Image (cartoon, rainbow, N blue to C red; front, top):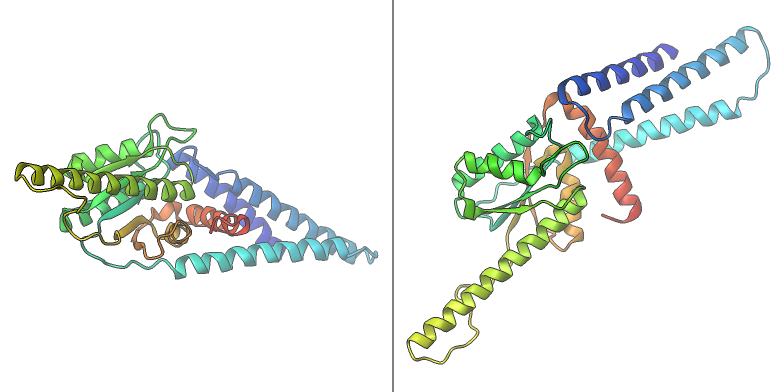
Amino acid sequence: MELIFIAIGIASLAYDAVIFVNHGLTAFMWFWPLFALINFMMFSLVRYVKHKNREKKEINLSPFIFAFTTYGLLVGTLAVILLIIFGNAKTLEQKNLDYVIVMGTDLVDNKISKSLKRRLDRAIEYSEENPNTIFVLSGGRSDYDKSTEATVMYHYMIKAGVPEKNLLLEFYSDSTQEKVGFSLRTIRQDHEQKMLANRVRHNNSMEKRNLPGDDIIIGVDRPLSIGIITSEFNLFRAGEIAKKYGVPDACPMAAKTDELMLVHFATREAVALFKDRLIGNI
């Protein structure tokens, strides 16, 4: 048993070092040294209990039972949440969506990370097949970057040939909750402005034809169709947050995650999902 704890601890430290070498400083890196420390402590407890048993000395097992039970509950809870996350990471193909939110994520040295590139490539692919869809590029500036995620995403999309008129930027958000919430607000504002422009153009047209103007809006005023592009591990929480903000049918579109970072991102997502559920964000 103690070998399992020591192996997990060493693997956690090694994984944290690999993340730093390949991606530099990124959010949630503190988790792996902490998890390693917890496993080293569990290793020490197992060795201590075995040592006392060999000496045939009586010890109070209550603290040890509590420690092992707590460890098991935490690891078990994490595993269940991960199953929920990946069990709901399903992509639904829906053509000609009005708006698609492209969720930003951490940059690497102020440049697009592999995971973010895959989200953007997914958006570019959808844009080529659905040229009238508007994309909301969402993401602010982290503590480690000079540019906002949205700005870097914008330049990547423009370089790929996506028309500027099809891009909206939301560069104030930090968390997934803010990215979804602020993006939905951006969508509503953009839609209201277009509706108002239609009304003005309609009334001006009536005036030129010497007809009474009115507030009729050309076209059918229907519910907006909205999609969300993000990595598969983030898809479930983003959809749940969208429901919280009154969009229960946001179309989920998953992008593959950088394989090296998948464990890190998925673990971070599980903790964030637990926190959001605990405080009522979803």
